[in-house]
Image (cartoon, rainbow, N blue to C red; front, side, top):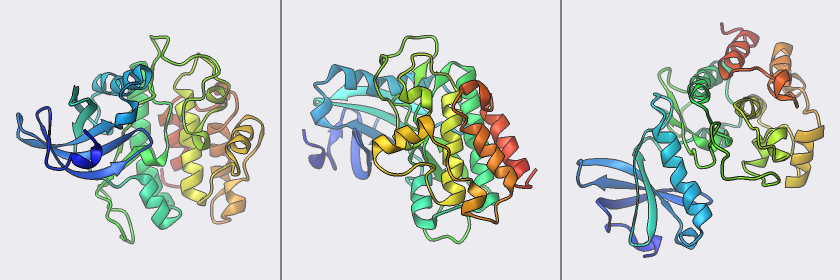
Length: 287
C-alpha cells in the first residue's frame, strides 16, 4: 500500500485520518485507535525502506527505547507494529508545531522564552541519561511545542516542550547498531565525538547539541555554516562567533555558557543538561 492511499484506510487497528508531517524516513498521520477509542499520532516508515532490515530495526527501536521513558517532556509511545507491509509506531498525539517551525517564523527567541524550553528539554535529557539512554539527535525539529500558535507575538507561559524522535537513540548498556566510522545524527548539531564515530557516546553529546540549539535560538544563526563537510570540520576544529558579537544585547556570560556547552572534549562540558540550563538562566539574569 502506498502512503498516498492511506487516508481513511485501516492499518491494523488504526484508522488513518490525515497526514500531519513528513520526515526523512517516515510520515506522521493523525489516526484513530479503534480499540482504545482515541486519536494518536501514527509514524509510518516509508515503504521503500521496508525491505531494509537495518532501517526497520532502527525504526522499531525508537519505540522500544522511548517506551522505557515515562516523563512529561518525552512523547509517550503506545504501540509498534506492522500491517499491509508498512511498519508503524503509535504515540500520543501532540501539537504538530516544533521549535524548528517557531524559529523559522521568528528567527530568534527572547531569553525569557527560550529559558523555559531549555529547562524542560534538560529535565527530559537528565531523566533519559540517568536511565542509560542517549538521544543523539537533539535539534529544534525534534522538540514539539504544546501551546504555541503560529503568528503569536509571544509564547504562552504554560507552553510545554516535548522531546521526540528517539530513532537513533542509543542505550549505554548495549553496543548499539552503529559502528565506528558511521555518521549518525544531524551535522549542524553533532558533537565532535559523534562525527569521529566514537563508540563510547554518552549524554554529553546531547549536552553539546543542546548548546548548539541555544546558540541558534538566541542568535538566529548556526555556529558553523557552509557545506556538510565544512560544518563537520567546524565542529571538530573551529570556534563559533561569540553570541554577544552577533547580538550585542546578549550578556558576555552567555558566551561562556556556549563555549563550555560546546567544548570539544566531553569532560570540559557541563556534565548534566540541568547544569547547562541553570547556567543559561544565570547568564541571562533569569534565576
